[in-house]
Amino acid sequence: MECPIQSRENADLLLAYCARKLEPRTAAILERHMESCPDCRAFGDEQRSVWAALDRWDAQPVSPVFDRRLYQRLEAEEHRGWWDRAVRPWLPRAWRPAFPLAAASVLVAAVLLFRSPAPVGFPETNQAEAVDMDLERVERTLDDLEMLRQLNLMARVEAPSLQPM
Amino acid sequence: MAVWLPVLALVVAGGAVVCPSLAQSRRAVAPPRPPAAKVFGPRAGRVLDRLNRMTPEERRRTLQNLPPDRRQRVEEQLERYNRLPAQEQQRLRLQLDRFRDWPPEQQEAVRRLFRRFNAFPEDRRALLKEEFRALNDLEPADRRARINSDEFRSRYTLAEQQFLQDYASLLLPQE
Image 1: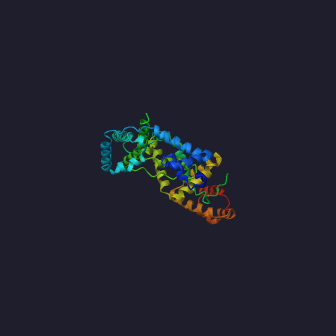
Image 2 (image 1 turned 135 degrees about the horizontal axis):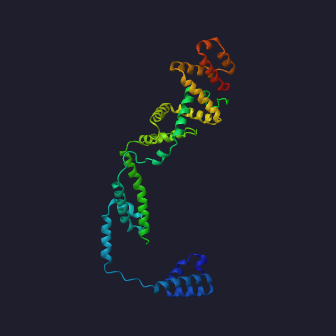
Image 3 (image 1 turned 30 degrees about the vertical axis):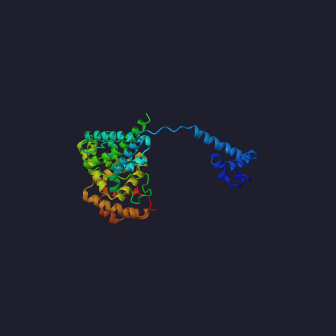
């Protein structure tokens, strides 16, 4: 028999053998080949271990209310709002229960913010700046600017045009 | 516990989204804040930027620490400065930077000159300012010639002539 792994033409024989669907005569031929072919033997061993694991696994019995709940969810899905349909796919599953709570928290924070007394006039008043400003420096700057403008001493301008005395 | 982490994250994120928009809406009902003055390179005038960034109320509170006459003077000077075209403001600030690089005693000499200028009557000050422009346009030799000319002597008083000579001594040769 030509090796199914080497030739790749009879690979379905190996799968059928592992699924125990191969007719006995062909299975006997394949088993004889596997005795002399380490690749096919290893492949067969692995497949058999998969089938054995599947044989050992017992599926959990389906809840008697499974169908009813499934249809309820399908119906609810059809009646979801556009917002829910848009947002839900982007939210991780673990976040979904938390989202309404978070939205409520944001709402509460917004209400508290609105209810806090709004400052009269300019809300960004910087008291410290108003107090700390060096007024003499302001006066000196304005005086000097006025002086330079009136005297036109630096008409030549941006290049240094004043001559140190 | 795993559920509360996303809750916290969403609250924080929600707050970040909601608060600026609320602040924006509250700002909308307040009187408009003056546009922030552009901060130019010259460092000497930045104190004016601070003053201009203030709201009228902030500025009033800041200046109320000054005696009334000085406060009025500052307000008038600031208004005059703000009325200047932006390019002229920038030019003046550059000049101020250069001026402030001078040794203090030389700066003080210019201030004394300006006090002398202010002591002249207004009509004479206007005449002197015209002379400033003329002197600025001349080369040093031509400037000296002009100051020694009969026309110059006949046009200005002795005090004005002396003032203009001192003024000319501060000007550099034309480049």
